[in-house]
Length: 249
Image 1: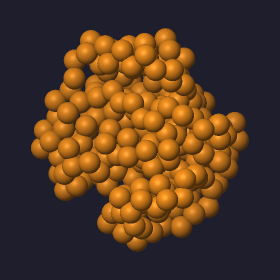
Image 2 (image 1 turned 90 degrees about the horizontal axis):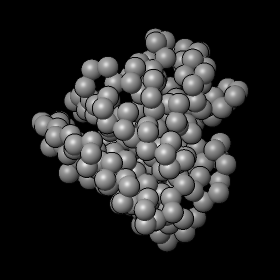
Image 3 (image 1 turned 60 degrees about the vertical axis):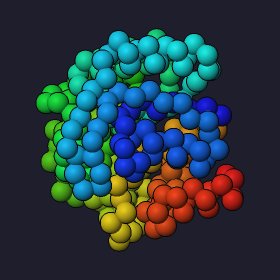
Image 4 (image 1 turned 180 degrees about the vertical axis):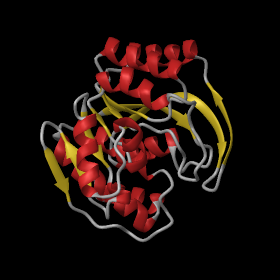
């Protein structure tokens, strides 16, 4: 099994490309990666971002797909409308089945995108996506719905679901994930009290892509990805990697 991540580079290793590749490896999936932006950040703050030129992003994608047969993958931080348009076009060109993590703000609160990203993601990327995995904040931007509770999250999921499948992740919904893939499903869960949540959205979307690359259907991939991320939060990412390597899924 092989998957691709098209995302930004977090030098702390907790989020972005490095987190995605760790997740792929933990789930016994060979990971490839296209870097869209370099960041200077840690768990506490983002101090700088250097986007990669679109022609070089395209070259990375083309060279990987020229040599490796890839079907599934995920996108993360794309940073600009120009990068979104390019990645959307390449997804269509190579008929990739992509999980979209609509990264716009880091867990520390720092912006990871230019203005107008939500509208560009809706206009270009979601049309090419297999499923999008916003948190509550991202779901508000994509749907235009103010989310205060589970009922609001369901409304937002229906709105986004007019474009593509969506799971609104449950970090701010008492641990419940809201899936819309033609119909609403509330996947009940529990919150884990921990500060070890940096990159959890990256890990979740990467795990969904990894499980689907192994032939698991979307709903069960989401359920298994949720378990993986909660184990990561409880034990720390490396503890989870070691656990999953010992017990190959």
